[in-house]
Length: 241
Image: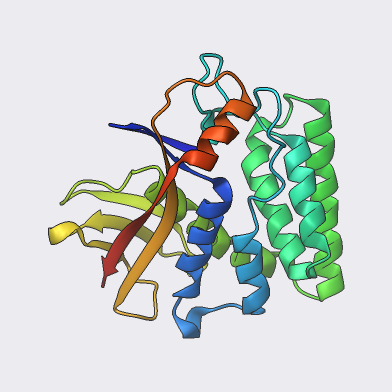
């Protein structure tokens, strides 16, 4: 979950919804700059946060009983294994991009856990195997993954309410073309990206937000019940070149 404090309590964006937002970002990409196979790349972006743990015990709560932001959780090797396993039977491209995403996220934690180290080693072997099977150089896969990483990063900035105030710029990431893209706010709460990566001159992105009024929860079951009763709103961002 992506957890934001709000006047009414908490605004919650599920990680799968964040992944759908990342896929929206990719869907608007300039046609001439879209790598192939495009459909499989979109599938990898849309599904990259699957495999979450079950709602049981207190997996999704802080020690104080508040909803737990996923950024505060240590690496979840079980979730990483599940998301790669789910991707591998969609297509080789979907599998290699998903695998690269897990190793990118978890490589900084190497050395902290033996199971994690083994997983990272296995994924590197898996990626080499897939590139051989596809008949492509590993750098081509890495360049394509850079697009996925950018879409994920921009989605997180939006979901975490980190768009800078008007006049300020925030670097999102680097594209396969080596261009570094920044987000900034213009007048009337219109955002823009520099350089502009999308086909259309104006783009609207959106994500669903669960509004919780309860601040503290006994366990995951209590939190899950609150989601069933929560009001769901749609948050939008308007971008203009």
